[in-house]
Amino acid sequence: MRMMASRGVTPRLGMAGLGLLTLLAGCERAPAPPEPIRPVRVISATPQVFESRSSYTGEVRARYETNLAFRIGGKIVARYVEVGSEVKKGTLLARLDPADTRLAIENARSQLNAAQANFNQAKIELDRYKRLFESKVVSQAELDRRQNTYNTAEAQFDSARSQLRVAQNQGAYTELQADADGVITSISAEAGQVIAAGQTVMKLARSEEKEVVFDVAENRLDELRNATAIAISLWAQPDRNYTGVVREIAPGADPVTRTYAVKVTVQNPPEAMRLGMTASVAIIRRSDASVIPLPLPSLYQQGDKPAVWVFSPRENGQGVVELRPVQVAAYTEHALLIAGGLKAGEKVVTAGVHKLIPGQTVRLLPEAKGGTQSFMSAEDKS
Image (cartoon, rainbow, N blue to C red; front, top):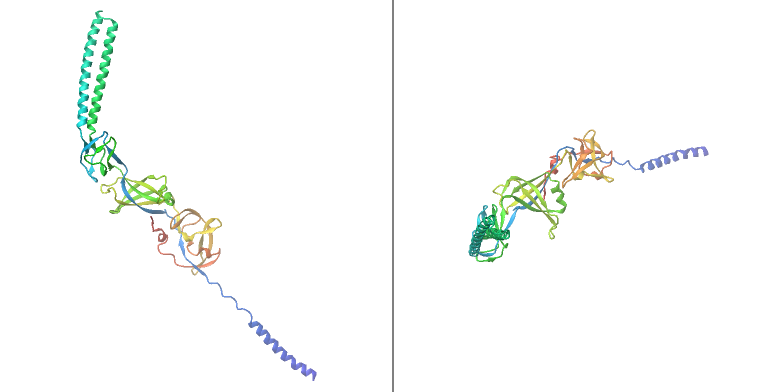
C-alpha cells in the first residue's frame, strides 16, 4: 500500500514542477527590437574657386572739392553761376569792384616812370664821368659816387617795375575763375557783399575723378582689405558695372554710428555718373586656389580641431560614417571653405552631425538640389 501511495504522489509532483517551469519561462523579457538606421543628408565634395560678395550702398562724390575765394578783399559786384552750374576751366565765376586796383595800377605805373627817369639820368651822368676820369679831369672818388648813384637808381627802377607787376596781378585777382572743370556745389557770398581775402565764396567739385562713399561695420573691414575686385553699379543704371579701387578707409569710427567711412575711386567714370547719385558697391573675394565649400552645419569639433563626417557607401543605400579632420581655409556668412582633408567626390554629412558616432550605419537621403550652389548663391548685404 505504501508503495502504491508513493507512486501516486510522484506523477502529481512532476506535473506541478513542469507548470512552474513554464510559468517562469513566460516571465523572461522579450529581446529589444533593433535600433532604426538613422537617415542622413550628404553633399558631394566639389573643389572650385570660391567667390563671395558683400554689397553696400553709397553716394557718388567728387574726390576733389575746392573752396574758391578771391585772393584780395573787396566788394562783389557780380556773380555769374548758381549752385549746380557745370563750369569749364577758366570760366568767370564772380567779380570784385576793380576801382581800387585800377588806381593802384596807375600809381605803380607812375612810380615806374619816375624811377626810369632817375635811372636814365644816373646812367648818363655815369657815362660822362667815366670819360672825364679817363681824361683825368675828375678823381676816382667822384667817379665812385656817380657809380653808387647809378646802382641806386637801377635798383629803384627794378623795384618799381616789380611793384607794377604786383598791382597788375592784383587787378587780375578781381576776377574769380574756375581752376578746373567741375560743378558748383555751394555758394556762400552774394553780389554786394564785402569779403576779405581768402574768404570762401563757393565750392567747386572737380569732375576729373569720382568716388563712392559708404560706411562699413568694424567686423567687415577685412573684407575690404582682402577684396580681389570691386564692382560699382548705379541705381539709375543697374545693368552696367564699373571697376572700383579702395582709396581710403577712415582711421577712426564715427562716434555716433560706430562705422568706418570708406572711399572707393571709380575707374573711368561715365558722364552719366553725376554727383549725389546712389550707387551699389559689391566687394568680391575669390580664393587663390580651389577649395571645397561646405554648409556651416557640416562642421564638427574634434577637440579643438575642425572635422566633418564622411559617408562611405555599402549597399541598399546604406553606409557608415567616419570622422575626418580637415583644414579650413576661411569661414564665410553661409559656408566654410575646406583647403585640405577631403577628396573630390566624397560625400559629407550636412545635418545632424552631433548625433553620429564613428562607424555608425546610416541611411542615405537624396542630396539637396543645386549642390554647393544652394547655400552659396545668397549675397551678404548691408
